[in-house]
Image (cartoon, rainbow, N blue to C red; front, side, top):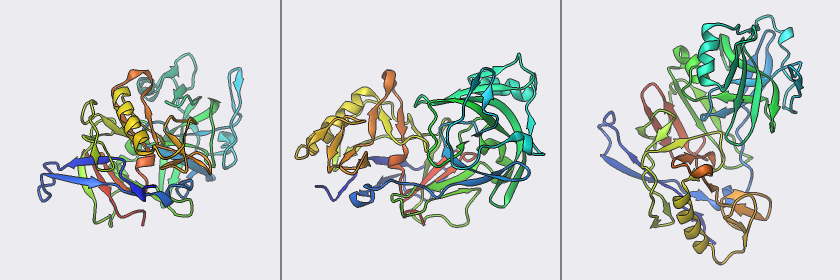
Length: 352
């Protein structure tokens, strides 16, 4: 068995704003096997919502825009039902600082360009929002007081979700959208945090990761920056399996980094290339078909249960040509998003 596997090589091309760095730097992210056979979690990102403050724990998601939590009475028209969550479901009627976003209004009109549905027939701004994994939520857009650590924000726009589709909340209460849309937490707090945030996802359940907003005083000494484009696109230009460079056909620079997706995805042809090379390297182990088609007994990387683990890559459904850089490959990296500066940094010293 491999002691470690260099799954992904990212050539982080230095940008013009980093003139002190060499023109091109190659960085491997090596993940040890013994750190991958346990579930990975971050210390919950606790936030306070409403007046009086009610604690909510939200999943950080750079791939979506909406901040939302479930709300009482868990009913929207003839539809009803909330999923089980970590804390008691937020009740807007018990908060003195809660207000609905009215419709028609400028905010609701802008929301209609970002979300899939805003109901203009109602006096309140109704919405529906879905995710790539088939999960969906619907409810009312509202404004509320939100406290994050020592900082408090008035009239943060968030989704008061009353119904859902295929929603499973594991020890959380909703999602903190961190993309570049106007409803995201990054945009709504830009005056305070200057559109800068950083996080580190731990590799062991016994370890603690972190999430920080604003420019940090202390960052990893190994931090290297590269360009960050719209949609959080990063310049992924090469893939290696071990020491073998794989022939790829995807458009270079078309990789989006997503903290909310566990599995990385590749276009069909490139995924097959990676899959076949990985299967060849793992030919001494028993191949089993589970949630992915690269799963082995006593294998590598993404644990399904105590005996089956899988390579955390999948083929893009529908024949797309983009690349999604999921959180399985982000573990133990310190990742700094400088959205305003158009750059992203990767540090390799773990979550400290």
